[in-house]
Image 1 (cartoon, rainbow, N blue to C red):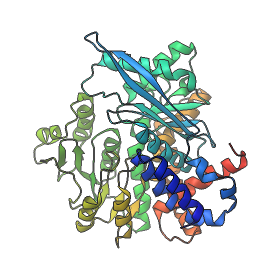
Image 2: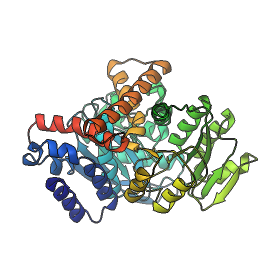
Image 3: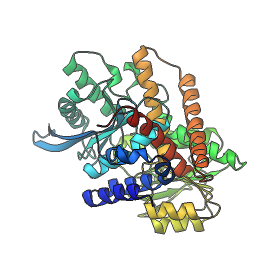
Image 4: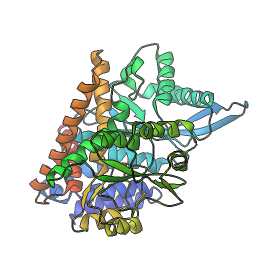
Length: 450
Ligand code: GLU
């Protein structure tokens, strides 16, 4: 391997041994970049890679909030402003018990390249808290969000840093966060957050965008193989916002999502999540806060619930891991290959361990697409929301959907071309890393060393 590349990876490994998710994503991205680094020896002198793996700024803050019984609780808030070379920092907030710097930094690092791939002017950022939203009342969520924003508001803004949702942060939380920002600043700067409700500056199609974008990307992959999405079976994981969007679009296009998963196991629905009632039920499941996928099997006869298991190994045409990081390990990858799956389309951020990803990429007849390209439709539509806010305009659903589709087609084509340019063949994983990297690298080189 290129010595500079290897040294940068080794430095991250030894410095951040206690942040394994961050190390994992740095290794995955950087190891794709060998031919680019070889071609650009000037990067080493400017320590481009060393700077890229170091966030421009990252901070923690105290978030104290009152529970309904009057007791006070304290959580840690995070925001990582990883790379602002091509635009204001942009990326979601994750509220989940397991959040710690390693999770925020892995998500922030992925976000740099994902946002770059969209072709839009957005830098990479991420934030969140180790707050556990499970079982919290609406009033508790509101007080937590208000306290969170009291700490964060001075460090964000429509031209500075634009947070959005991620796990545990949906339209409700964004509403409370925005309300508090507006109250503190005394201005209506709705471009400070995306994923807002439509009544105060949210974009049409933003809730669906990540799932729709993933399916648009998938259609490009299928077209390359001379196939169509109609009648295809898809295994998804999770049942949250992203999976809902995939089910909705797949249903519209005549494909069937046959598995969903949750912390309690997975469900298999041979008929697919392919009626309006079933698609809408996913929203009900999410809003219930129960976090149980078994509810789906209880509601719809003919479906089976497999407690404690994952859907990897079910015979389908396409796997779309859309739940969370490191959901698919080597043992699952082997089962996926054995089941004769032809398309492995990552959707959640880093859903595959690095060894499992390599295994799947090396399988004959398996096409692998990386999440940072496949799920970029969400943040791309956030950037469209920012455009609408700054222009004080509202675009129709058709207009946003058309732009989303165009962006996904471009991401796919750019990835294919980048891999080909460096002699890597049809390699969507390396292509996305290279294309995403190149734009940020050019901007950083142009702006001088800091
Ligand atoms: N959290 C989403 C992501 O991983 C969306 C971020 C955004 O819209 O800014 O890309």
